[in-house]
Structures are given as C-alpha cells and as structure tokens.
Image 1 (cartoon, rainbow, N blue to C red):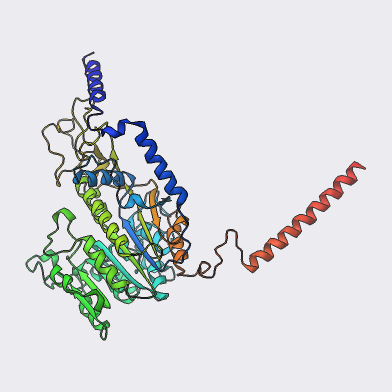
Image 2 (cartoon, one colour):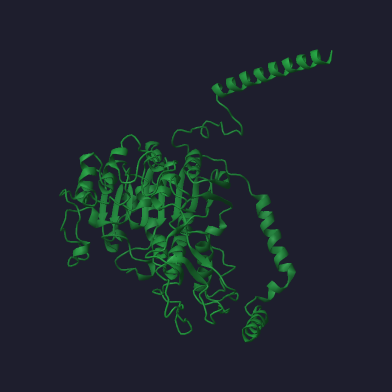
Length: 536
C-alpha cells in the first residue's frame, strides 16, 4: 500500500511540475500550427538538386545511433543554456533522411570494419575484415588474395579528384582503413601486429598500405607509433614506452612518405603549432599525426597541442578544394564509439556535438549546388534514453521517477558494459552520486568488459546534388553506390551522360524486354486458341 501511495504521489508531482520548463508560446496551439505550416511550405518549395556532385563531403559518426543523435542534440542545446529538446543541430537541417541496415554477412550486429567496407566499398563483408569481400575469412591471409574491393576514395582519386581522411582515431583504425586498405584483420595496424604466417603468405599491414595503395592528399588523425621502427621515441612523449614505435621491419613510414612526395609541397606535422603554420593554398599533401594512437577525447584535448575536429576539417577542405575536379573527404568522429564502449555517455555525447560542429564548418566552406554532403553512423550502441525526465532536465542527470527498489536511475544507461554493478545484491545507490561528470560510467543491465554495439538501423542524412536518392530503408552498401552515382565516379557513369531516367535500360536489357514481351504475346494467343477449342 505504501509503495502504491508513493507511486501515485510521484506521478502527481510529475504532472504538476511537467509544465515548469515549458515556454509560454508552446502553450498556444497556434505556435505548433505555425511551425508545422512553415516546415510544410519549406518541403513544398524544395527543388531537387540533380547536378553532378563535384565534391563529396562524407561525415561518419562511429557508433552514433539514433539515441546518441537525440541525446547529443539535447546536450548541445543545454551547453548553450537552452532546455535542449528543441535544439536544431546542423545534422537536423539535412532535408533528405533514410535508414540503413547495418548487419554484416556473418553477424547480426556488425563492427566498424565490416560496416566501413559496406558504405565505402559498396560491398557487405564479414566482421573484422577491411576492404575485402565476404569470401575472405577473418584472420586467414590465404583467403585474401583476389578478394580485394576498392572504395569510393579510390574511385574519386582515379577520376582526378583530390581525396582525404580526417579522423579522431588512429588513421589505421577500421573506418579510415576501409577507405584505402585490404586486410582480413582490422587489427594489423603495423607489421608487429601480424602473425608470421600472414607475412609469409603475402599480406601487409594497414600502415604500409596507407602509403602504397592510393595517393591520398590529406591524412589527419593519430597513429604515429605504427609508422616508426620499434623503440623509436615519440616526439611528444619520449619517456612513455607504450608510445614508442612498433614496427619490426625497421621501416620509418613517415620518412618514406616524405620521400614519396619529393617535388611536391608536402608537410608532415605532429603538433598544433606546425599544423597551424601549414598554408593550405601552398600545400599539395599533408600528413598530420597528433598522437601515438587515438586522439584525446574532445573534453580532454590540449588545445595548445592538438587541433579540434572543426580545425582539422577546415584545413583538409581548404587543401582539397583547390582541385578544379573536386574532392572526396571522409571525416570521422571516431571516439563516439570508443566512449560508448567504456560506458561513458558524457564523453560520447560531447564527441557527437564536436562532430556536429565540424559538419557546420563543412557546410560553411562548401557550396551546396556542387557538394554532396552525407552524414551517417556505421552502427549503433546499446545506449537508451529512459524514464520520464522533465523538459530541460540535464540529459546526463537522473530520472525524477525512482525504480521499484526505491532508488534513482540515470536518464541514459546501457544494455551492457562495464557499468554493471551490484553491491550486496543490489545496484548502487545514486542519490549522492554526480552522474554529470566526464568520468561517470553509466549503469548497465549486463556485465561486459566493454559495451557492445547494437544492431538497429542507423540514419543517413544528405544534402546537395542528388541528395534525394538517400531515402527509404536500404542496405548499408547502397550508400557508396549512391555517392558514386551522384559524383560520376566509379563504374556507373549514367548521371554524367544524362541517363538518370527512372526505368532506363541498356540496349541489351531492351532486347531482353522485347523477347520477353514476344513470348508473353505468343503464350497469350495460344491460350486463347485452346480456350476457344474447348468451348466449341
């Protein structure tokens, strides 16, 4: 009885307080009607942009599922002293939205290697593999030869465009690697990470492929230690043994990259001072590796040493857009995913907000009539947004409703992960715990060392030339083909040739249709004759 009365009291208080943060105009029905009419008119007035995309600007939020998307929107508004729910992120302004299915060929829930291969190479593959078809087997080098598939980054380069990758992880990580590498293991960052058998069978590490496979104009991220010989001191952390070079083959790939660019204006930098000194107008190539491994989380970044994702995106764009043939740029907010794996929603949401700011910078520096801009996630995470928090309540706070164990719980929590805790058979009492700090680990229902991905569809958003073809629910590998079609790179050149007519067929297809029609006609006539004979 007492618990029932308590529940009734809580509900009463919720209802009584529910309008406390509502804006006065929102209580007027005409506010919502006017807003809806404005949105409707914008949709009615929208004209399809059927231009050929000179440029492709592709933003990837690693692990940025729909819940992360929504929670990041609220956080972005709250960081600006708004209630947050009504905030319009840059991503929200993209007029064309679709969903993509993220499963890999062998698993219901994918990883970033399989998904990266899908949306960059246009082919679905197996977990843990990069730039190879599903006929290749995870970790089995002997299955790799002949199974390699190329990415839209290479298609764009072959078409004469400048190309670049920007990431907040190491440049050898799954997402950027899928744009240039072929590997049956995403973990073969350097030759030291490879088994001897794989080397004997002819496989090479991802770092060496960064230099050899495609001539990439701009490379920005982390991953210095995979580029230098074992024991090489890191310029930023010379006393940290874990930051030292890893390579067993003695190659210094940074120096080799410099030699490969002789005769061109090429800069290698590892700190913000040198990065800022790079003049994009006078630069042909840039390799910027700011950390031995992944970059620091945005909220822990030292702005005197490492630039933000906004700054790296801007520098890359200014270098690439000098090419009159256009560019392809991949920008990854890669540490959204890594924060989720750690169960740290604070970090994940701040990384997503930083990516949204980079998207805004990208739109500012490009022209919509010639640049196809696409934003998507590769997969989701088990993050959930729950309870009945008041409007404007901190997204990182606790629900005003308590659970049946008479204890509070956070608005954000995970299905599994390191946040699963039991004390004397009960979950931790959060009444005196500050859940809004960067180091707080959200509660999780199931104990796992690292939170897993989740398998629901993720959003793909687009604006610019042919953005309207990003709609509906599609397989994830469709994205690469749609981008390539819009920009006339790769094998499908119909858009440049003016053949993008619905139902357009090739001469061979037309002949097949004619033959099929003839067969159907003859069959119909014979059927009629048989019926007539039977009726006589």
